[in-house]
Image 1 (cartoon, rainbow, N blue to C red):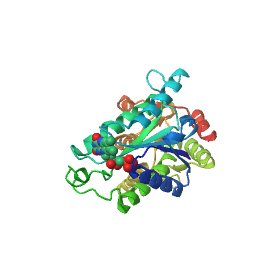
Image 2: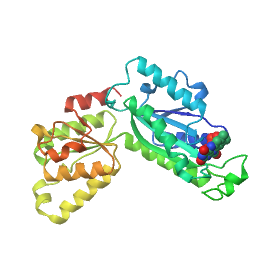
Image 3: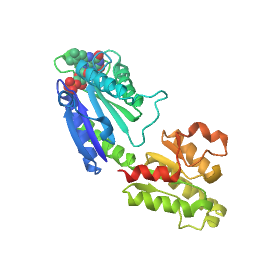
Length: 300
Ligand SMILES: Cc1cc2nc3c(=O)[nH]c(=O)nc-3n(C[C@H](O)[C@H](O)[C@H](O)COP(=O)(O)O)c2cc1C
């Protein structure tokens, strides 16, 4: 995965977080570049699989240099026709927003609007905003704001423990962004196996149905069936998206449960055809044939 981190930092807190994210992403095998916003004028967001944007909260907004950067990029992409009505998702393009804040007056509510605001630029460009992270940072130069605010004594934050967690979360994010869970019913195992093989060949981490198990035995053994289901839930947790192979729209009970679980966990759900069960439709992000789906990984 190719990632870029663009950040602005006045007193160093956001920079520490940016560096921890860089380490975490690298640990997970990503190619990462890091730029201060002042040097990021020529960055093309679409040239990266993951764009991480970081800044401190100033009055529940991004500070002016970051705001100007996001707006100028947005204007340029809009002029190129890349801002489309309905904001269709561009496959494989993800963003992460990270804000540091001191929260002296109203705590985390002083930064959430800034994170959501920045995320909107990316959603409008078709990116999936994987998350917004809010990290506590000492208010350098104001002892009162660093000790008597809503969050108490925040001197020294982000501290080693905060940064360790950031690094760990970044690794996790990178792994998830490259992981697909393939779901299907046993009657389509042959086709699903081919998809899995192809994805693996493209370097994607894939979780998939237990092809090696006797599916009749699984269906008739309650213990085994629930073990398999639980295993799939854990694998869905580790995946960025679920691809459900549904020839002629067929969707069985197990796949319905898996998609419902994935949806509740905020995962993207891509299906090969519209499911015959209409109740599943609101959970689907995209319909994409196996050929189209595989083609996007080949380009990577
Ligand atoms: C001019 C200025 C305005 C700030 N406004 C807010 C604010 O409205 N809410 C908040 O939680 N923190 C506010 N802060 C604190 C910073 O967001 C926080 O200390 C941040 O971690 C600093 O990041 P940096 O070290 O990367 O510059 C402000 C800091 C400055 C210097």
